[in-house]
Length: 175
Length: 149
Image 1 (cartoon, rainbow over the protein chains, first blue to last red):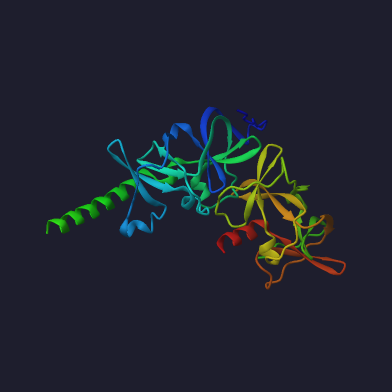
Image 2 (image 1 turned 90 degrees about the vertical axis):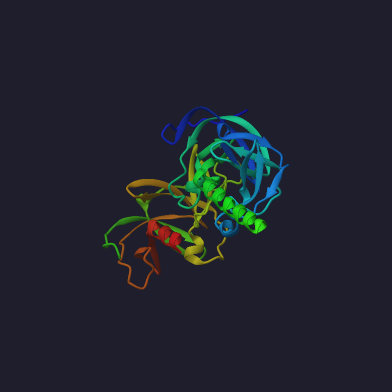
């Protein structure tokens, strides 16, 4: 493992050895805190998810997973980052909420010692997507904010929508 | 709005295609040649800020690359040969950016003439240099306009 350290204390915030997972999506590389990931698994067991009126708002959520008696909503990382479609092979099950992310590949796990804030010139959605930028083997890698994939509030909204649809379907079946 | 003319200001003149533009010299810190590999190679990651094309790693600092050429001269821009490293003011904080330019730059002392009302708001003045009129750019305004576009 090789981790670059910055000599500029003002620019790079030193971190006490945060472990991150490097993954790739549509040709781009990202890092996520290992503590934010509950499980890395293959794509077995994914079910199609139809969200009705919420479908447009949550276009990046097209699948779900039943895991340990709970529904997990699966975010397509390509759609999240507005990247060209790519064939995912792995699923990162997140810890902060019943949510998961499809990614192309898991590269490695390593220890991060410094992270720089996203330069202020970046003013778009990336301000929400990233916690900061890491320098790993001479490459600038964004460190993602897990909540940006799907927040707890968004999960509650999707759950409520699904419950409404299921109740409607039961009422029709019972009539 | 145009800034008041000042005599004897220093400007960095830089080419974008066939046209030259100017920035206040105090806003420019360095001129750098891009490299294809290693440090100072432009790197990219997903984002949605329109005028930014990536970042440079420069002396262990991450500098955003702001390609203003398409906004100034259209999509047909020759190869960018150098980066001007500039300071940008953002709500009382100063940040840096690398602006790709298509040729060598020149330092010139000149009087800034007021820009007339027909010019875009990001032109903060004009320089009359021999047989050439050069627009002085207000980079912060240019980038803000580009964000709104």
